Length: 156
Ligand code: HEM
Image (cartoon, rainbow, N blue to C red):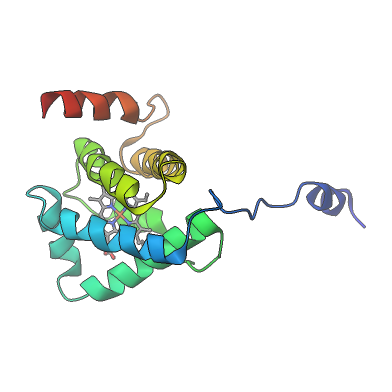
């Protein structure tokens, strides 16, 4: 057996759910509620409807498999989020803050108060990697989502 195989045997991939209370029903609820709000958002709604006018139901099904993979580690999603976003020319950096400011309260509605912060942290991590793929250069780091989120709430 090679050395690299030995290493993978002692460091198995973490397959535990992000929180033990998270269920597929809660994920389905999160996705339905989140996209209801996103689709009626003045800034983000048109970006989604331009791309998904005739495939809204298919997008919701895909997003349920994505969150199932991410939160429950089911492996249900096999797509590639980075190219899907890099090709969205009308998205601006600040749109990520808007996306997260819609996501956070929906996560608190859909999940337990223990699970919701972990789900939000996960979304923020993925937002950072998508932001870097879309707007990053070798010298930039993603915005501090917590700070910008709080500022948005203060302004509201
Ligand atoms: C500014 C924020 C965002 C905008 C405007 C946005 C918009 C979109 C749009 C329009 C699509 C459909 C692309 C297509 O099928 O042609 C899409 C797909 C997707 N988005 Fe986002 N998104 C944003 C942030 C995020 C974040 C933060 C996540 C994850 C936490 C995410 C996860 C995904 C995934 C998994 C897909 C499916 C990719 C695939 O086709 O496999 N998005 N997004």
